[in-house]
Image (cartoon, rainbow, N blue to C red):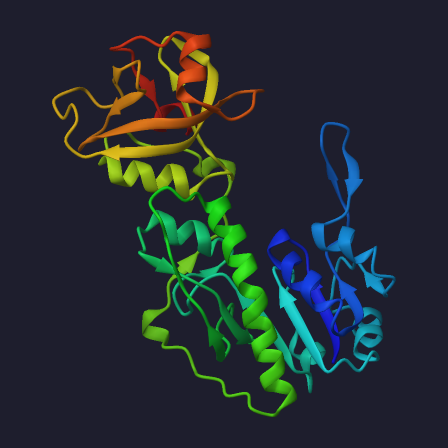
Length: 314
């Protein structure tokens, strides 16, 4: 099958890597190279970097719907367009007469939008999954062609769940393409009454409020790791931010303590509005992620000191 692949982020990389050996990739479209790192050197997207090894036409347009770009990619006469985390809206004129599918990291209509994996963890959803949909004028509102699912484990971060769903998406895309080749595609309309939105995240979202129940704090830490990350500070060292990377809920521990208090310096336990959190992994500014034991040896946290989330980050 002749496939045009449109994607930018790492989420689509396993699918492109899987399709390339078995299908004819007639072209790849990705976002333009952007400055990255301290030097600000231009860096290709993960899809652009891999596509450069395929020896296929590669476009990096600022505007996918520009007439010259649209004309060039439509002239490829691909049998199918596979769109995964591309980052630009494809216009109706561009898609006219094209079989185009989109892999989205949620079980639509739940969590339409830019950050569905984060949103699922933040909301405490027990399961998530992928959907393959047709492209529509409204965001993520197309017909559902296929779905899968997997449980969300309490210790999973958004980054880990992202990678698992990206791998799950490979089989789902392959299944839909096979159904298309046999003329067996059947789309199902989404129930608009069940639609929820997962807006794009920013650095300003990287806070936690220890006055909230411990379970809500856990969801926030795991749902925002690795990006934008939940940043806290120690009251005794307010100029040294720390990102919490992985935590565990202790439901009945130290409920009488002031919220944000480090009630056990040896184990890394912080009192919350209901229950407590045990810090498993964290990342001091400018350093790598480390276990609490390693952090404690080098930084000597003391029982009774306050850790601040919301106020330090807003």
